[in-house]
Image (cartoon, rainbow, N blue to C red):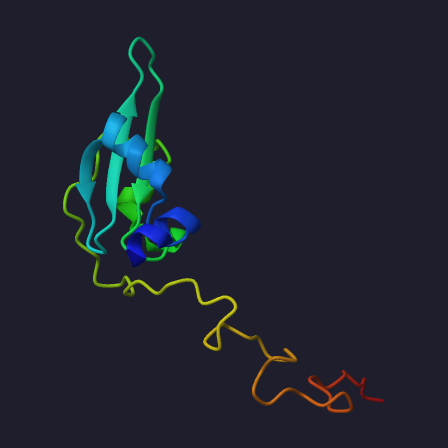
Amino acid sequence: MKNFLLQFFTWWNGQTLGTRFYTWRKGALVGRDEFGNRYYRQSKPGKAAERRWVIYNGMAEASFIPPGWHGWMHYRQDDPPAAYEAHAWEKPHEPNLTGTTMAYRPPGSILRANPQTPGEADYEPWKPEG
């Protein structure tokens, strides 16, 4: 019952009832990624345009789409990606942290744990010799 109410009243918890119905009627499952997201496509008969969409596993957060699937979603490649192997230099995925306590706050930000006081200089001016 809880899942039904979440799908009925919210759009950020997976999929809505309208999306579920549309996917059931016209969607063809293309694949899944390591986060459990499911990718679908729907071709219109007689047209070259193809509609693509994702149903997120949990919270609808666009940063949860891996690079290979991102390229497919944005029509940069026609074929869905094969199993993606991360390079040694790539960092593991981090969700978008904006608005959380873990968000990046540059030096001088008033939201930083130890912000600079207004009288404290953050640079030293150049003084010519002479």
